[in-house]
Length: 199
Image (cartoon, rainbow, N blue to C red; front, side):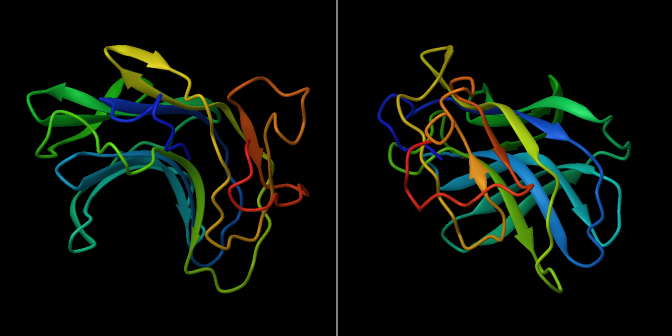
């Protein structure tokens, strides 16, 4: 995540995330990027694997005042394995688009033409409803996260670990200086760095 002033406010967020199949027998594992508009509506796009399924590309919009989903869409086709770019950005007026490799997979009026100036942009792995802790294969975010500021995609000056209590580890350039700037990997046998440590 980044809440660095170099990334906020913005008109978009994007990440390049490795898509791969693995077994999630019960519950869901998801990988996504998100942005929150100044209208307090939050959009995410990425992919999930739930209850033994293959990967599914999805987008959702949440109302952060009521914590309810106000829009959702999924692709009917399974994404191919490999690195894919997921993005959320201002399309026109106050309508924002969610894309998968440049193809729009959802759009919604987020009530503002700019992001929140304080809510972080996220590129995340997430677990939900797992019957028991599972391991996931090492998954690459080859472009960890970028924000669109003044029409240009920029790397935030700082990106930090934010762990909601997940069961897998993470590594970025802050943990391994041989890694490319603004990239990170999750899963495998990686240790979990302390919360809020720089990536």
